[in-house]
Image (tube, rainbow, N blue to C red; front, side):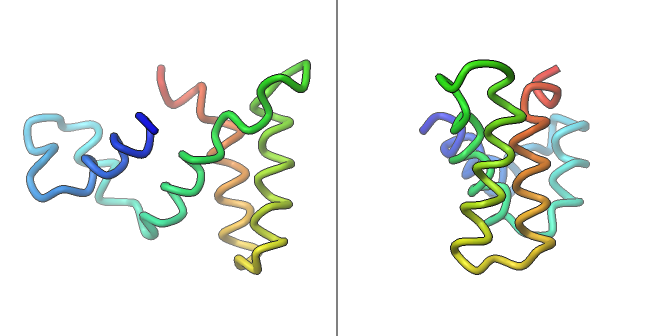
Length: 89
């Protein structure tokens, strides 16, 4: 829920004016709903053993396909889930 709150904050007007890197990143986000979905699913692979990001990406992609998201959106969500730990760096 904290991730979703932060995603919501990201899209508030002028929320990032004093933070250059996230402000510039925000400008490249085409679909906030895809970011929110990836945020919701980012740890879905935890508890399955091994790399939870890789396992979560597979689950997230399947979820997107099962819910009729486009192939592009499914790939984007899967990529975001798989790489979410890198983004915190």
